[in-house]
Amino acid sequence: MSIVAAGEAWRVRRASGLKGFWTPPGDKSVSHRALMFGALSNGTTKVDGFLPAGDCLSTANVLGRLGVTIRFLNEARTSLEIEGLGLRGLKAPAEPAPLDCGNSGTTMRLMAGILAAHPFRSALSGDASLTRRPMKRIVEPLRLMGASISARGEGDTPPIEIEGAELKGIAIELPVASAQVKSALLLAGLQAAGTTRVKEPSSSRDHTERQLRRLGAAYRVDEGGWHAVDGGVVLSAQPWQVPGDFSTASFFLAAAAICSRSDLTITGVGVNPGRIGLLEVLTKMGARIAVTNQREVSGEPVADLVIKGGAPLKGIRVAGDMIPRIHDEVPVLAVVACCADGVTIIRDAGELRVKETDRIAAVASELTKLGAKVGVLADGLAIEGSATLKGAEVTSHGDHRMAMALAVAGLVAAGETQVTDTACVATSYPGFATDLASLAGEG
Ligand code: S3P
Figure 1: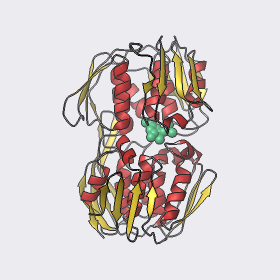
Figure 2: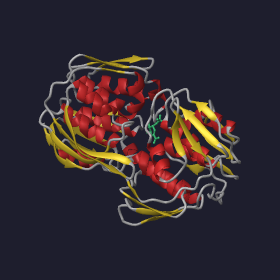
Figure 3: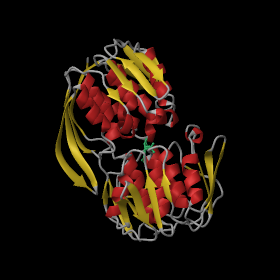
Figure 4: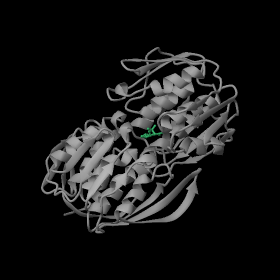
């Protein structure tokens, strides 16, 4: 066993490689959207392959408090049905307590866009990490659309208080590329009078746009790259098959790339172009990855990935338009960079400072404890490759993606690596340690 769960900590030892076949759990971003679009559609939505992890269950609970009936159809809670209430059909929460979004930024930001169009009072809050995250980015544009909304915490952080209203379409250019902000505004626009137009400085994941099209909304991309949606067009319920989560798969891809005797096939993973930056970066670094069996499922591209370890890796520069397509994967990319020849530079990634934790600071402090040479830049990281990592005690900072990235580092470190504060993986992948242990052979 290369990884053993010991209470809230993992003890990780060196692994020779990851071998076998593995299907990732359902995509987190798509699972949130299946619930939200199901609630706003007319009719019953059947979902299969749902991710029953903390973040998506937060969305389910929030919608439940807003009068939406969600029925789980199996014990694993991967299949469910949602009774749609139609556009602007959510009910005011019976209790005044804020709607609890847990650790989930997607729940809070997308639900704020939905609730801004509902004519009742509501409040959204979350855990200690979520209540530190910036919300001005959604509050300001939703106000321009006519909502009465404010982020009550210091520096425009949660809780968010909303008095919904009849919204009107606006045109807005976002200062940063963010799928959560873009989606919040498109969901508000779907329920507003007139047309809402949103433009990003570079492209973020387009799960929302794909589903707007599939479910019958009047959505298009106008000249100049403006995402445009007309309000008031009814959505008709469609079945959803949720693809495997690429961001979760990225830990296994990275682990297989750096453990020399790997031969791993990842089946049924979503390969939305806005998500697979890491696949392209690993390939450029020299990793041997084949993309096979490409198909489309419920509007999303899906494929199988075959990765073989042992290829020499070289450092790389990652910046600009690539960043929104890889930002959830930067912690694990930093681990791969430690094993590559030469320096890896990551720039334009200031957004990483306002994720579940400050991922720039957290990556640098924890990988340094393992013996890596990591420099902190204002908007990124500089990592000297070919470091010999040595096991040590490291912490996730309460961030699920940090916990999983550090476990991957443990697979190539000498001796034992203890990853503490790992309960946070429940937000996206409760089965991570068990699955990694079953695929990773002892080094
Ligand atoms: C998400 C968008 C991303 C990502 C997050 C999920 C989504 O954030 O980091 O984990 O489901 O829309 P951005 O809003 O910064 O793109």
